[in-house]
Length: 222
Length: 190
Ligand SMILES: Cc1cc2nc3c(=O)[nH]c(=O)nc-3n(C[C@H](O)[C@H](O)[C@H](O)COP(=O)(O)O)c2cc1C
Image 1 (tube, rainbow over the protein chains, first blue to last red):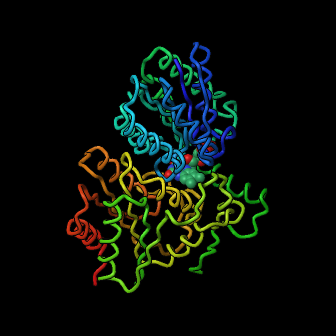
Image 2 (image 1 turned 90 degrees about the vertical axis):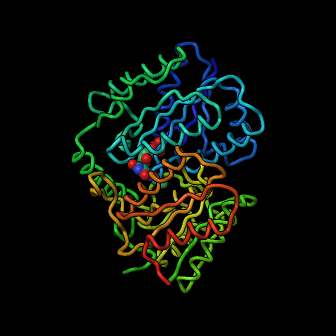
Image 3 (image 1 turned 45 degrees about the horizontal axis):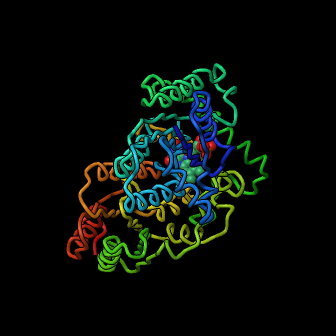
């Protein structure tokens, strides 16, 4: 089986999307699946990179989109890639019955804020003749800063859910409901996330030596 | 009163281009000034996800390209209309490229809107927003997703965004009706 993990975050390997996507990818590899990774933002900057991703897409039995929620949907370059895949499929009928899975996380605490984005991916799958394998969605993505170990309980539950997902996908199955439920559960109380998040913005401003206040209005209105 | 039309369609997409034309005409009948921005002709790079617009240069993206000009115009408008082919239930990548660059308009601090966490507003006043999507043939699921996406985008700005989907082959009277309906719904009268 050939699997392609498409990382839809512009931050590439420094992103939460990479952490989650590669978690599934490595779990697939452990089970004998051939896994390739594609950094969508980076590859779409050149015609060559775009062509490479489109070819990889077409030759995969399983594609997993790992992305951050951007404005309630997919980041623009990932949307562009899906448009190009669909245009291609219009011309050449999809070979076999490739599957599409998703792992998405967002900055707000509520995982359900990702539902529309998941629906868009699912509609894309239907449109291009792919089989929908399901989606993992997580809120509080801001707490996944490069290290599962920083999560409550060392992130064991999330790692376990990723592993179960890889196991099911490698078998040809869908993302298990149990893994979806673990992802949907808040990583911490909402008040704690927003409190630390608000503090985090201030700390980053200080680190970046920001010259204007947090609520500055560069485009007028006082 | 000023209106801004964000044209998120590609050259050759006659249905969406018709929607832009009819929306522009409908607006011209009701407001003093209509600006049409053809996103395909601008240089707008993809958001880098660095949050520099919140923590380095608050309110402004660290990348200098045409997106800043669009944001200024956006804030200076009373009405903004997004026009886009409905793309698997979402926006076209051309429109989305610009929308991803709109986060400097918000303040990073969290607040509760409709029982969910969202961001504080940076500005006192934002334009009323309408969204006209186009679909070459009926697709109930894509239409449902589109309506939900537009509604969710409204929450981010603590207000209601109105959406319509124009389905079928280019037909100026239907496109015009959709545009007029949207303007009625946000209370923009001649
Ligand atoms: C342009 C932009 C738009 C975003 N829009 C949303 C949004 O609509 N809802 C949300 O919960 N988070 C939103 N976020 C937050 C990201 O989803 C969040 O920071 C995520 O953890 C980033 O993941 P990554 O490290 O994989 O890039 C947005 C971030 C950016 C940069």
